[in-house]
Image (cartoon, rainbow, N blue to C red; front, side, top):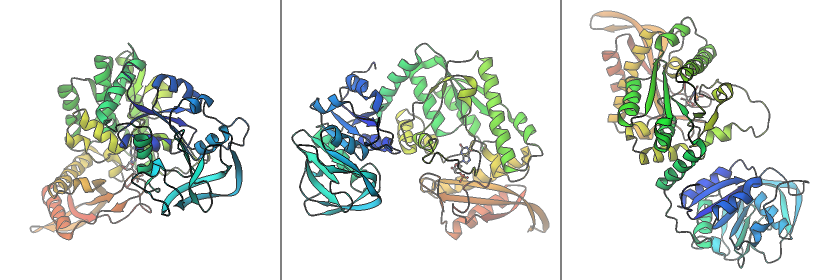
Length: 519
Ligand code: XMP
């Protein structure tokens, strides 16, 4: 790392599904942290010289032979340590306590009772209080390591929180990093600020600086290619990488002609003119629409678009002479979802289109500077990098674009009709001040024609559905409850202003049982 060392916390990862959440909570407390897998933790400790260590949870059992351990010298380094779940168990065992397999574990909501004050509880919890926490464990500590005492208990875990205040070692059986432990973020903030003594003045500006240094170190003199989709994630990744390595980055924008009104032009002018980023704008509309001709099955449409995108991207990469690295705007939720907890296959509801298949095919190394971030943090970073609000705050837009909002055959004419209707709908949402309260809002052009009357004429035109949902992650969603006056204003404008549509309906379906997109 080329940056001067900043105060930091080292998070040792034992493979928990939620280790990244620890990092996020520590960041929210204004403290920089890095995650190192347990087998690289010793090296990370030397490099980072952390002011505190957090040992994560994990799927292993400390009773298994060869299950992971924290480097033993961590416990003699004079640095505060917080062990969470598996981290607590290995810490207890490594320091001379005992852990046993429970016949039944504790999973989900549990209540702990505070038995004694401790530095983790400063300004937060007092003796005798009961608080909700989130447990997920089978094994449990049955004998404390010397110097530890119990400061909180739960029904299933007599050692729910233990502390060795002299050494500044703390251990929780539950997960403070998840939102179902309502005070968990404050407990972690107490650990990093009160116990480790860190100021809590770290910001996204520093994340930016650290990532820039990391990208420079990773890429060296190499060349990087980045596929822009018009979405927030790839845009933020590209701008950040450009700041790090300038003209070593080339962006490729495969314009499939299925974007919303004015969006493609906006991407090109923002990147080329505003940021001066080398951008190859591939106008592939004809190629995509040609291939979509006659396709009506949603999966066939999706598969064609995904495959064609990769083909076009590869051709363009070859034209510019290839690259050593492929940049992607992968976010933390993509990383979690790509690890199957059960290891079993899951049912494909929709084949999602992104550049996921590219790295293996193109034999390139990956640059993924946003891997640790959640969507809202990417937005903060985007603003930090000076991306305009209208771009950074934009609703998610699917890779296959308008093609999956036109059930049935996709034609240029139908794309143009939909673009106009969609633009009117979004304009009304923005002017009513509702845009940011909605996760996603869009129009859908149905392959259904109905009879209407306009003036003295009979019309026989398409139906347009409008949809708006609230959600936090796109996995589940609820409909947005517009008032009737708003919806009738939208319907009137669309029917009056868009030739080809004579009826507007509102989609009242939540997810599940519906999905957000129509195809
Ligand atoms: P569904 O329709 O499955 O969508 O409820 C959930 C979220 O994912 C978006 N979406 C996609 N995003 N490539 C993407 O990058 C895709 O192929 C794709 N399909 C759906 C959708 O817009 C919603 O936010």
